[in-house]
Length: 203
Image (cartoon, rainbow, N blue to C red; front, side):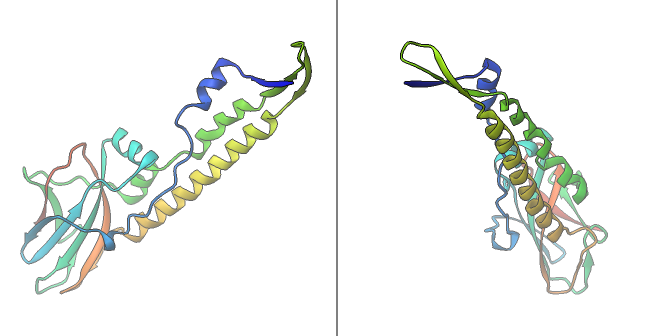
């Protein structure tokens, strides 16, 4: 006896789409080897682009956003407040347009509901045929495969999004006070589609 699965062309196409949920790999700004640096008024900025992977990287590129890890060291004689006493600018003098953390997360995060398309596999059946080519039985495997893939991917996407949001919030620099001699790390999002050099702009 031989087995074959009769699936519509639509389902065959969707099964091979690169649409499985992505995990989230923590960035850990404190452990990054920073190679880009800028110094202004004894305040040192070190930063790095190219932090995200897989689905998150695709969403970042699609929305013309750059997520940047930064390391700020205050070697001045006074404490400073990020966003008030210092800002970032590009080499051409234009200010870096920073994205509020919650908006940044909502723009780049995965959409768990998008994996509901796996439910299209629910009608899928496994047909068994005899040596004479006649169908002998039918098993509705789609009842397990469809909901299983949909549910599994939605759970994976939600978990990855939670880890992504937690790290963004943990390293949110907006309004952060940096004491004299202190070093802080952060994750910032900018509205940009290029990897321009960044400088500190002291107010």
